Image (cartoon, rainbow, N blue to C red; front, side):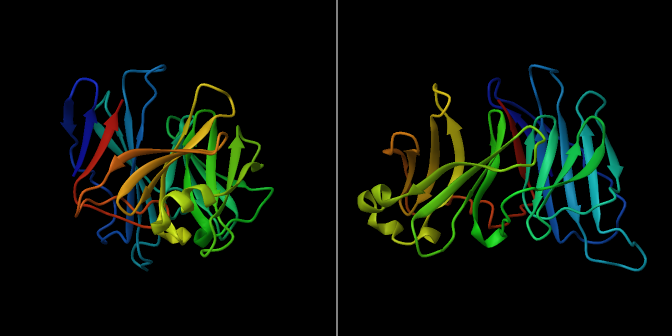
Length: 251
């Protein structure tokens, strides 16, 4: 079940169940909200389903697209498969296929799937802490080792397929203030936000007991939210969660 919620009006809509083409149970499934209020009041929901291989049904990746204007779903079998977490950015869903070092791009309106070979910096799934969009670029945060507090922030702009190194961060400041994150796998990058200045980026991090902010330009910290016992934060790009009910939010 998919629910689209408008945070401004506090209204929500339960979407009809997508019909799909396969009788198999999906191994992985991800839903993405495609919405740009500057272009249209209508939104689309894109669901990517990854199935086990089958002789009867030879395809193993399927895309279902919901259009709020028509209220209907449409099912497509793209020529390429996508795995892992995707990101909606600039009118398209992007999946990072690290073992092929390519970006798979699905243009939502045109319904076109394209493979974009990355021209620089080989990326492994194990090294990634975050993959998402921030303003006019895609952002990747990765590390070279799970036992250090060193992070690298890479940005890809437009369709150049060149990753630009924006920051090389040693998070000793965070480690000193919060010794519970002694190893890098003890925190998760929830999102990257941009400040008033062009180069003013900040990380929102989940650590044991807190959600904190870290300004990469100023090297400053702030506590955003104290977690209570039993409260959970999603694992991010390296973890998968496939709930039976998924809520997608309009801002």
